[in-house]
Length: 444
Image (cartoon, rainbow, N blue to C red; front, side):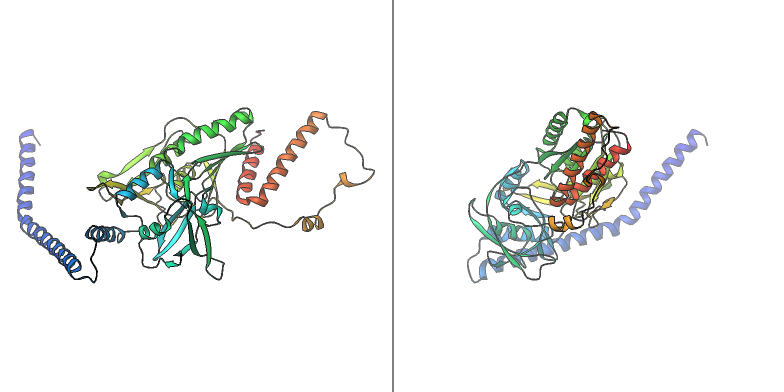
């Protein structure tokens, strides 16, 4: 086809397109006009109902609160995570994101009309009072939460620092509801805590706020230095149990901290053009050392992004129980009047393309948190006697003092983990895995 014929074909195609568009434009425009008319009719209906309430309700109404309730009703009808934030709540949310706020220290969601605990936050009044992930809160100070929105329920739990609130809890495995008394306090979240279990560095991440990545970097470096350098580290445990999530940007930074390359997470909204992919940059804070990620049913949102990224890239072994399953992204949009709306705008997907919405992340190794282990008397009854316990035994003269000290050090590490099992079985299991990897790899 010569250039003249090609241009003609293109013009014909374009003209055909114009003709075709013209042919269907009439019905489309008519449909659009009808849809708009229907929307205006519904808005007129809203105005009519609003006026009738304002004029005829048995008591005078606060018009501002009435409109806010209508806005919130519209948003909460979409999903449990979309809501209206009046100015005071918007301010509180911004403070919370910075890592300090007033309250009980409890993350909640709505499930089938009931308020469910996602997770208590480490070291907060709710955590100290024994509130657990998966608990249902039915009453606050004797007032039923049934029929309230999530924000209304949260508002009942708020109050002055130092004041008491009584929550009625329904817990799986407990026959009757029970009350828990909690004193409200200023919640100062330390996003990352760390500890050493022998030669294993445990990094406990309790939330994803503005301080999380910097806290992770600081705590990791401090513990590695305490051990005497990275070559002395057997591995890392990243403990995300009961971490309800937080900022997407911080989840990406924490994931990137342990990945050299590849996708971390993608988000997909209604418009394909709004999709985003976030990729790792070179650099691994753990310098290739093995990692175990600990999760449970209280691990949600940003925690699941980090877990999914490290699991899909085979950078970490995931241990614990299935995560919460919140695979949606909320955008906070300021609106007139200094308030904001929190609107679900996208779903997120792990690098392998998994959406974990309502499914959660399954661990590579399922480990339940065991109850307290046997008593000392029970352990003594089943204790095995060894050669070393026998009177008149032969001594081992084929081992040097240095080798003996090394064996004793290894035994102390094993005993430390055994002791840990009684207080935190899942963490002890994670440490055992890392020790096993270190032994197989010849690391010490």
